[in-house]
Length: 453
Image (cartoon, rainbow, N blue to C red; front, top):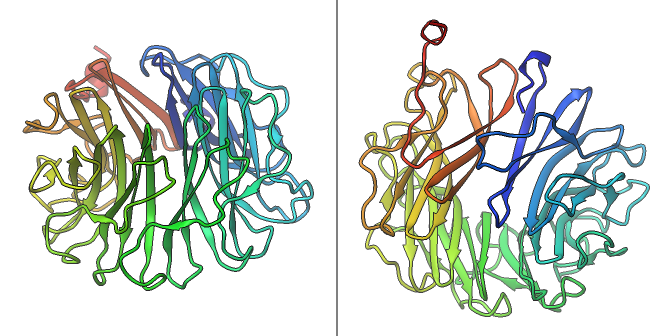
Protein backbone atom coordinates (compact mmCIF):
# COMPACT_ATOMS: atom_id res chain seq x y z
CA UNK A 1 0.00 0.00 0.00
CA UNK A 2 3.06 2.32 -0.14
CA UNK A 3 3.36 4.35 -3.37
CA UNK A 4 5.73 7.13 -2.27
CA UNK A 5 8.13 6.60 -5.18
CA UNK A 6 5.31 7.46 -7.60
CA UNK A 7 4.29 10.59 -5.63
CA UNK A 8 0.77 9.21 -5.37
CA UNK A 9 -1.54 10.59 -2.69
CA UNK A 10 -3.50 7.75 -1.08
CA UNK A 11 -6.20 9.08 1.25
CA UNK A 12 -9.50 8.32 3.00
CA UNK A 13 -8.76 4.72 4.13
CA UNK A 14 -11.67 2.67 5.41
CA UNK A 15 -11.45 -0.83 6.87
CA UNK A 16 -13.50 -3.82 7.92
CA UNK A 17 -12.51 -6.94 9.88
CA UNK A 18 -14.35 -10.13 8.98
CA UNK A 19 -15.39 -12.72 11.56
CA UNK A 20 -12.30 -14.89 10.97
CA UNK A 21 -10.05 -11.87 11.50
CA UNK A 22 -9.24 -10.99 7.87
CA UNK A 23 -8.67 -7.25 7.51
CA UNK A 24 -9.95 -5.50 4.38
CA UNK A 25 -8.86 -1.96 3.45
CA UNK A 26 -9.99 0.47 0.74
CA UNK A 27 -8.88 4.00 -0.09
CA UNK A 28 -8.75 6.49 -2.95
CA UNK A 29 -5.60 7.50 -4.82
CA UNK A 30 -4.56 9.17 -8.06
CA UNK A 31 -1.84 6.83 -9.34
CA UNK A 32 -3.47 6.68 -12.79
CA UNK A 33 -4.32 10.37 -13.02
CA UNK A 34 -7.91 10.32 -11.78
CA UNK A 35 -8.93 9.55 -8.22
CA UNK A 36 -9.89 5.85 -8.04
CA UNK A 37 -10.82 3.28 -5.39
CA UNK A 38 -8.24 0.62 -4.48
CA UNK A 39 -8.30 -2.44 -2.21
CA UNK A 40 -5.92 -4.64 -0.27
CA UNK A 41 -6.26 -7.22 2.49
CA UNK A 42 -4.35 -8.84 5.33
CA UNK A 43 -4.89 -12.34 6.71
CA UNK A 44 -2.56 -11.82 9.69
CA UNK A 45 -3.98 -8.81 11.47
CA UNK A 46 -2.31 -6.07 9.49
CA UNK A 47 1.25 -7.45 9.66
CA UNK A 48 1.44 -8.26 5.94
CA UNK A 49 -0.72 -7.38 2.93
CA UNK A 50 -1.01 -8.67 -0.62
CA UNK A 51 1.81 -7.44 -2.85
CA UNK A 52 -0.54 -5.96 -5.42
CA UNK A 53 -3.50 -3.63 -4.84
CA UNK A 54 -6.80 -4.21 -6.65
CA UNK A 55 -8.56 -1.47 -8.61
CA UNK A 56 -12.30 -1.46 -7.83
CA UNK A 57 -13.62 1.58 -9.72
CA UNK A 58 -13.61 1.46 -13.51
CA UNK A 59 -14.81 4.92 -14.54
CA UNK A 60 -12.83 7.60 -16.34
CA UNK A 61 -13.64 10.29 -13.78
CA UNK A 62 -12.90 10.75 -10.10
CA UNK A 63 -14.08 8.12 -7.61
CA UNK A 64 -14.14 9.44 -4.04
CA UNK A 65 -15.07 8.84 -0.40
CA UNK A 66 -15.13 5.02 -0.13
CA UNK A 67 -16.91 3.01 2.54
CA UNK A 68 -16.67 -0.73 3.25
CA UNK A 69 -18.61 -3.50 5.00
CA UNK A 70 -18.01 -7.25 5.30
CA UNK A 71 -19.90 -10.33 6.45
CA UNK A 72 -18.65 -13.89 6.13
CA UNK A 73 -17.18 -14.30 2.66
CA UNK A 74 -18.82 -11.11 1.39
CA UNK A 75 -17.09 -7.72 1.06
CA UNK A 76 -18.87 -4.61 -0.22
CA UNK A 77 -17.27 -1.29 -1.19
CA UNK A 78 -19.23 1.84 -2.13
CA UNK A 79 -18.12 5.32 -3.19
CA UNK A 80 -19.03 8.60 -4.92
CA UNK A 81 -18.30 8.52 -8.66
CA UNK A 82 -18.34 11.39 -11.20
CA UNK A 83 -18.34 9.37 -14.44
CA UNK A 84 -22.03 9.84 -15.35
CA UNK A 85 -23.35 12.89 -17.18
CA UNK A 86 -21.70 16.11 -18.27
CA UNK A 87 -22.06 18.06 -15.03
CA UNK A 88 -19.54 16.11 -12.99
CA UNK A 89 -22.10 15.23 -10.32
CA UNK A 90 -21.52 12.25 -8.06
CA UNK A 91 -23.44 8.98 -8.30
CA UNK A 92 -23.10 6.06 -5.86
CA UNK A 93 -21.30 2.95 -7.13
CA UNK A 94 -20.68 -0.45 -5.55
CA UNK A 95 -18.22 -3.32 -6.00
CA UNK A 96 -18.40 -6.62 -4.16
CA UNK A 97 -16.58 -9.89 -3.60
CA UNK A 98 -18.06 -13.20 -2.49
CA UNK A 99 -14.72 -14.90 -1.77
CA UNK A 100 -13.18 -12.70 0.94
CA UNK A 101 -11.70 -10.18 -1.44
CA UNK A 102 -9.81 -12.62 -3.66
CA UNK A 103 -11.83 -11.67 -6.74
CA UNK A 104 -14.23 -8.87 -7.65
CA UNK A 105 -16.86 -8.17 -10.29
CA UNK A 106 -15.83 -7.35 -13.85
CA UNK A 107 -17.98 -4.22 -13.68
CA UNK A 108 -18.90 -1.90 -10.84
CA UNK A 109 -22.58 -0.95 -10.53
CA UNK A 110 -24.40 2.37 -10.05
CA UNK A 111 -26.97 2.20 -7.22
CA UNK A 112 -28.86 5.48 -7.51
CA UNK A 113 -31.47 5.56 -10.29
CA UNK A 114 -29.76 8.46 -12.10
CA UNK A 115 -27.98 7.14 -15.23
CA UNK A 116 -27.53 10.63 -16.69
CA UNK A 117 -25.90 12.02 -13.56
CA UNK A 118 -28.42 14.85 -13.20
CA UNK A 119 -28.57 14.79 -9.38
CA UNK A 120 -25.86 14.75 -6.72
CA UNK A 121 -25.48 11.68 -4.51
CA UNK A 122 -23.11 11.95 -1.55
CA UNK A 123 -21.82 10.36 1.66
CA UNK A 124 -22.50 6.65 1.04
CA UNK A 125 -22.70 4.37 4.08
CA UNK A 126 -22.81 0.56 3.89
CA UNK A 127 -23.63 -2.26 6.31
CA UNK A 128 -23.74 -6.04 5.88
CA UNK A 129 -25.07 -9.08 7.75
CA UNK A 130 -25.45 -12.62 6.50
CA UNK A 131 -26.03 -12.52 2.74
CA UNK A 132 -27.59 -9.05 2.91
CA UNK A 133 -26.04 -5.62 2.47
CA UNK A 134 -27.54 -2.13 2.50
CA UNK A 135 -26.26 1.18 1.16
CA UNK A 136 -27.61 4.58 2.21
CA UNK A 137 -26.68 8.01 0.85
CA UNK A 138 -27.81 11.63 0.59
CA UNK A 139 -29.43 12.47 -2.78
CA UNK A 140 -30.50 15.77 -4.39
CA UNK A 141 -32.91 14.14 -6.87
CA UNK A 142 -35.93 15.92 -5.28
CA UNK A 143 -34.27 19.29 -4.64
CA UNK A 144 -32.80 19.53 -1.15
CA UNK A 145 -31.01 16.33 -0.13
CA UNK A 146 -33.03 13.30 1.00
CA UNK A 147 -31.79 9.96 2.36
CA UNK A 148 -32.09 6.96 0.05
CA UNK A 149 -31.30 3.28 0.53
CA UNK A 150 -30.93 0.21 -1.61
CA UNK A 151 -29.69 -3.29 -0.89
CA UNK A 152 -29.12 -6.90 -1.81
CA UNK A 153 -30.24 -10.10 -0.10
CA UNK A 154 -28.11 -12.53 -2.11
CA UNK A 155 -24.54 -11.36 -1.60
CA UNK A 156 -24.61 -8.72 -4.34
CA UNK A 157 -25.88 -10.83 -7.22
CA UNK A 158 -28.96 -8.60 -7.49
CA UNK A 159 -29.36 -5.01 -6.25
CA UNK A 160 -32.77 -3.36 -6.14
CA UNK A 161 -33.52 -1.28 -9.23
CA UNK A 162 -35.23 1.53 -7.33
CA UNK A 163 -33.85 3.00 -4.10
CA UNK A 164 -36.22 3.67 -1.20
CA UNK A 165 -36.53 7.09 0.43
CA UNK A 166 -35.88 6.94 4.20
CA UNK A 167 -36.74 10.43 5.55
CA UNK A 168 -40.48 11.08 5.70
CA UNK A 169 -40.92 14.85 5.51
CA UNK A 170 -41.89 16.40 2.17
CA UNK A 171 -39.48 15.15 -0.50
CA UNK A 172 -36.75 17.65 -1.31
CA UNK A 173 -38.06 20.24 1.16
CA UNK A 174 -35.11 20.22 3.59
CA UNK A 175 -31.55 18.98 3.85
CA UNK A 176 -31.03 15.41 5.10
CA UNK A 177 -27.42 14.20 5.10
CA UNK A 178 -24.57 12.21 6.65
CA UNK A 179 -26.46 8.89 6.91
CA UNK A 180 -25.31 6.12 9.25
CA UNK A 181 -26.59 2.56 8.87
CA UNK A 182 -26.69 -0.76 10.77
CA UNK A 183 -28.52 -3.99 10.02
CA UNK A 184 -28.87 -7.61 11.10
CA UNK A 185 -29.33 -10.98 9.41
CA UNK A 186 -33.08 -10.94 10.14
CA UNK A 187 -33.56 -8.00 7.78
CA UNK A 188 -33.83 -5.21 10.35
CA UNK A 189 -32.12 -2.03 9.07
CA UNK A 190 -31.75 1.24 11.00
CA UNK A 191 -30.62 4.51 9.40
CA UNK A 192 -29.77 7.70 11.34
CA UNK A 193 -28.97 11.08 9.77
CA UNK A 194 -28.77 14.87 10.20
CA UNK A 195 -31.96 16.73 9.20
CA UNK A 196 -32.84 20.45 8.89
CA UNK A 197 -36.60 20.21 8.31
CA UNK A 198 -37.33 22.31 11.42
CA UNK A 199 -34.51 24.87 11.21
CA UNK A 200 -31.24 23.91 12.86
CA UNK A 201 -29.92 20.38 12.39
CA UNK A 202 -31.66 17.56 14.30
CA UNK A 203 -30.86 13.83 14.43
CA UNK A 204 -33.47 11.50 12.96
CA UNK A 205 -33.75 7.72 12.53
CA UNK A 206 -35.97 5.31 10.67
CA UNK A 207 -36.21 1.52 10.59
CA UNK A 208 -37.05 -1.18 8.06
CA UNK A 209 -37.99 -4.73 9.04
CA UNK A 210 -37.96 -6.14 5.49
CA UNK A 211 -34.32 -5.74 4.40
CA UNK A 212 -34.84 -2.13 3.37
CA UNK A 213 -37.75 -2.77 1.00
CA UNK A 214 -39.79 -0.23 3.00
CA UNK A 215 -39.43 2.03 6.03
CA UNK A 216 -41.79 3.26 8.73
CA UNK A 217 -44.21 5.94 7.53
CA UNK A 218 -42.97 8.32 10.20
CA UNK A 219 -39.32 8.73 11.14
CA UNK A 220 -38.22 9.55 14.71
CA UNK A 221 -36.41 12.61 16.01
CA UNK A 222 -33.75 11.41 18.47
CA UNK A 223 -32.50 14.72 19.90
CA UNK A 224 -35.78 15.26 21.72
CA UNK A 225 -36.31 17.12 25.00
CA UNK A 226 -36.49 20.59 23.45
CA UNK A 227 -38.08 22.18 20.40
CA UNK A 228 -37.21 20.67 17.02
CA UNK A 229 -34.76 22.77 15.06
CA UNK A 230 -33.92 25.01 18.02
CA UNK A 231 -30.23 24.07 18.11
CA UNK A 232 -27.73 22.12 16.06
CA UNK A 233 -27.23 18.40 16.66
CA UNK A 234 -24.50 16.93 14.47
CA UNK A 235 -21.69 14.37 14.03
CA UNK A 236 -23.90 11.36 14.73
CA UNK A 237 -22.45 7.87 15.24
CA UNK A 238 -24.49 4.66 15.26
CA UNK A 239 -23.97 1.09 16.43
CA UNK A 240 -26.03 -2.03 17.08
CA UNK A 241 -25.84 -5.15 19.22
CA UNK A 242 -28.81 -7.48 18.79
CA UNK A 243 -32.01 -5.51 19.36
CA UNK A 244 -30.08 -2.73 21.10
CA UNK A 245 -29.35 0.26 18.85
CA UNK A 246 -27.42 3.32 20.03
CA UNK A 247 -26.92 6.75 18.49
CA UNK A 248 -24.62 9.46 19.87
CA UNK A 249 -24.04 13.00 18.61
CA UNK A 250 -22.73 16.46 19.53
CA UNK A 251 -25.54 18.72 20.73
CA UNK A 252 -25.58 22.52 21.24
CA UNK A 253 -28.74 22.76 23.35
CA UNK A 254 -26.88 23.98 26.45
CA UNK A 255 -25.19 27.01 24.88
CA UNK A 256 -22.25 27.85 22.65
CA UNK A 257 -20.39 24.66 23.57
CA UNK A 258 -21.57 21.23 22.47
CA UNK A 259 -22.25 18.27 24.75
CA UNK A 260 -22.50 14.61 23.79
CA UNK A 261 -25.94 12.99 23.97
CA UNK A 262 -27.06 9.38 23.50
CA UNK A 263 -30.40 7.87 22.56
CA UNK A 264 -31.14 4.15 22.46
CA UNK A 265 -33.65 1.58 21.31
CA UNK A 266 -34.19 -1.85 22.84
CA UNK A 267 -36.52 -2.77 19.99
CA UNK A 268 -34.25 -2.76 16.98
CA UNK A 269 -35.02 0.89 16.20
CA UNK A 270 -38.82 0.54 16.26
CA UNK A 271 -39.05 2.66 19.45
CA UNK A 272 -36.60 4.99 21.23
CA UNK A 273 -36.11 6.56 24.64
CA UNK A 274 -38.34 9.61 25.16
CA UNK A 275 -35.35 11.85 25.81
CA UNK A 276 -31.61 11.43 25.17
CA UNK A 277 -29.05 10.91 27.91
CA UNK A 278 -26.14 13.30 28.45
CA UNK A 279 -22.80 11.47 28.48
CA UNK A 280 -20.49 13.91 30.30
CA UNK A 281 -20.36 14.29 34.08
CA UNK A 282 -19.24 17.95 34.16
CA UNK A 283 -21.67 20.88 34.12
CA UNK A 284 -23.91 21.27 31.08
CA UNK A 285 -22.38 23.36 28.32
CA UNK A 286 -19.29 24.29 30.32
CA UNK A 287 -16.89 22.72 27.81
CA UNK A 288 -16.98 21.73 24.16
CA UNK A 289 -17.45 17.98 23.56
CA UNK A 290 -17.47 16.78 19.95
CA UNK A 291 -16.61 13.89 17.62
CA UNK A 292 -18.34 11.17 19.67
CA UNK A 293 -18.01 7.51 18.78
CA UNK A 294 -19.93 4.53 20.17
CA UNK A 295 -19.52 0.77 20.54
CA UNK A 296 -21.84 -1.80 22.10
CA UNK A 297 -22.11 -5.36 23.34
CA UNK A 298 -25.69 -6.10 24.31
CA UNK A 299 -26.74 -3.53 26.92
CA UNK A 300 -23.15 -2.48 27.59
CA UNK A 301 -22.39 0.66 25.59
CA UNK A 302 -19.19 2.71 25.40
CA UNK A 303 -18.98 6.36 24.29
CA UNK A 304 -15.70 8.18 23.60
CA UNK A 305 -15.36 11.85 22.68
CA UNK A 306 -12.97 14.81 22.68
CA UNK A 307 -13.49 17.53 25.32
CA UNK A 308 -11.71 20.79 26.19
CA UNK A 309 -12.85 21.05 29.82
CA UNK A 310 -9.26 21.50 31.05
CA UNK A 311 -9.02 24.94 29.46
CA UNK A 312 -6.40 24.14 26.86
CA UNK A 313 -6.49 21.53 24.12
CA UNK A 314 -9.02 18.77 23.64
CA UNK A 315 -8.58 15.59 25.67
CA UNK A 316 -10.08 12.15 24.96
CA UNK A 317 -12.62 10.71 27.42
CA UNK A 318 -14.50 7.42 27.68
CA UNK A 319 -17.66 6.59 29.62
CA UNK A 320 -19.68 3.39 29.58
CA UNK A 321 -22.96 1.98 30.79
CA UNK A 322 -24.01 -1.57 31.64
CA UNK A 323 -27.72 -0.90 31.11
CA UNK A 324 -27.91 0.77 27.71
CA UNK A 325 -27.11 4.27 28.91
CA UNK A 326 -29.87 4.51 31.48
CA UNK A 327 -27.16 4.77 34.14
CA UNK A 328 -23.41 5.18 33.84
CA UNK A 329 -21.14 2.53 35.32
CA UNK A 330 -18.56 5.12 36.43
CA UNK A 331 -19.24 8.41 38.21
CA UNK A 332 -16.86 10.28 35.94
CA UNK A 333 -15.61 9.53 32.46
CA UNK A 334 -12.01 8.33 32.17
CA UNK A 335 -9.36 10.46 30.47
CA UNK A 336 -7.24 8.39 28.09
CA UNK A 337 -4.02 10.42 27.64
CA UNK A 338 -1.05 10.21 30.00
CA UNK A 339 0.25 13.74 29.36
CA UNK A 340 -1.10 16.66 31.39
CA UNK A 341 -4.80 17.52 30.89
CA UNK A 342 -5.32 20.08 28.15
CA UNK A 343 -1.61 20.16 27.31
CA UNK A 344 -2.12 19.23 23.66
CA UNK A 345 -4.87 18.78 21.12
CA UNK A 346 -6.29 15.24 20.86
CA UNK A 347 -8.89 14.44 18.21
CA UNK A 348 -11.10 11.73 16.68
CA UNK A 349 -11.31 8.83 19.17
CA UNK A 350 -12.04 5.24 18.14
CA UNK A 351 -13.23 2.44 20.44
CA UNK A 352 -12.30 -1.24 20.16
CA UNK A 353 -13.58 -4.06 22.40
CA UNK A 354 -12.50 -7.68 22.69
CA UNK A 355 -14.09 -9.29 25.76
CA UNK A 356 -12.59 -7.77 28.93
CA UNK A 357 -10.02 -5.90 26.84
CA UNK A 358 -11.09 -2.43 25.76
CA UNK A 359 -9.09 0.23 23.93
CA UNK A 360 -9.46 3.81 22.74
CA UNK A 361 -7.27 5.28 19.97
CA UNK A 362 -6.84 8.93 18.95
CA UNK A 363 -4.59 11.40 17.09
CA UNK A 364 -2.60 13.90 19.19
CA UNK A 365 -0.27 16.90 18.71
CA UNK A 366 1.62 16.71 22.03
CA UNK A 367 5.08 16.78 20.39
CA UNK A 368 4.26 19.33 17.69
CA UNK A 369 6.13 21.97 19.67
CA UNK A 370 6.47 24.45 16.80
CA UNK A 371 2.87 24.11 15.64
CA UNK A 372 3.75 22.70 12.23
CA UNK A 373 0.65 20.49 12.19
CA UNK A 374 2.29 17.09 12.68
CA UNK A 375 0.65 14.55 14.97
CA UNK A 376 1.06 11.02 16.26
CA UNK A 377 -1.37 8.18 16.97
CA UNK A 378 -1.91 6.84 20.50
CA UNK A 379 -4.13 4.42 22.36
CA UNK A 380 -4.86 3.40 25.94
CA UNK A 381 -6.41 0.16 27.10
CA UNK A 382 -7.77 -1.92 29.95
CA UNK A 383 -7.64 -5.71 30.35
CA UNK A 384 -10.16 -5.88 33.22
CA UNK A 385 -13.31 -4.29 31.79
CA UNK A 386 -12.42 -0.77 32.79
CA UNK A 387 -11.22 -1.54 36.31
CA UNK A 388 -7.76 -0.16 35.59
CA UNK A 389 -6.22 1.71 32.66
CA UNK A 390 -2.57 1.98 31.71
CA UNK A 391 -0.62 4.78 33.35
CA UNK A 392 1.13 5.48 30.07
CA UNK A 393 -0.61 5.54 26.70
CA UNK A 394 0.92 3.67 23.75
CA UNK A 395 2.19 5.27 20.54
CA UNK A 396 1.26 3.53 17.28
CA UNK A 397 3.21 5.17 14.41
CA UNK A 398 6.97 4.52 14.28
CA UNK A 399 8.29 7.76 12.79
CA UNK A 400 10.24 10.21 14.90
CA UNK A 401 7.86 12.15 17.13
CA UNK A 402 5.73 14.75 15.34
CA UNK A 403 7.56 14.56 12.01
CA UNK A 404 4.53 13.74 9.84
CA UNK A 405 0.76 13.68 9.87
CA UNK A 406 -1.26 10.54 10.58
CA UNK A 407 -5.00 10.75 9.93
CA UNK A 408 -8.16 8.75 9.18
CA UNK A 409 -7.19 5.91 11.50
CA UNK A 410 -9.20 2.76 12.18
CA UNK A 411 -8.60 0.65 15.29
CA UNK A 412 -9.25 -2.97 16.26
CA UNK A 413 -8.49 -5.33 19.14
CA UNK A 414 -8.43 -9.05 18.49
CA UNK A 415 -6.84 -11.89 20.44
CA UNK A 416 -4.52 -9.60 22.38
CA UNK A 417 -3.33 -7.74 19.28
CA UNK A 418 -3.92 -4.15 18.19
CA UNK A 419 -4.48 -3.34 14.50
CA UNK A 420 -4.49 0.20 13.09
CA UNK A 421 -4.72 1.48 9.51
CA UNK A 422 -4.22 5.16 8.65
CA UNK A 423 -3.12 7.74 6.05
CA UNK A 424 0.44 8.95 6.64
CA UNK A 425 2.48 11.77 5.08
CA UNK A 426 5.98 10.64 6.12
CA UNK A 427 7.15 10.06 2.53
CA UNK A 428 6.16 13.45 1.14
CA UNK A 429 3.01 12.19 -0.52
CA UNK A 430 0.26 10.49 1.49
CA UNK A 431 0.38 6.68 1.81
CA UNK A 432 -1.74 4.11 3.62
CA UNK A 433 0.03 2.43 6.53
CA UNK A 434 -0.94 -0.42 8.85
CA UNK A 435 0.41 -1.65 12.17
CA UNK A 436 -0.48 -4.93 13.86
CA UNK A 437 1.21 -5.53 17.22
CA UNK A 438 0.68 -7.25 20.54
CA UNK A 439 -1.26 -4.96 22.82
CA UNK A 440 1.03 -2.66 24.80
CA UNK A 441 3.97 -2.98 22.38
CA UNK A 442 4.96 0.55 21.41
CA UNK A 443 6.51 1.55 18.12
CA UNK A 444 10.24 2.23 18.33
CA UNK A 445 11.89 4.87 16.15
CA UNK A 446 15.29 3.78 14.84
CA UNK A 447 17.55 6.48 13.40
CA UNK A 448 18.37 5.73 9.73
CA UNK A 449 22.12 5.55 10.38
CA UNK A 450 21.53 3.01 13.16
CA UNK A 451 19.25 0.93 10.97
CA UNK A 452 21.95 0.73 8.33
CA UNK A 453 24.59 -0.75 10.67
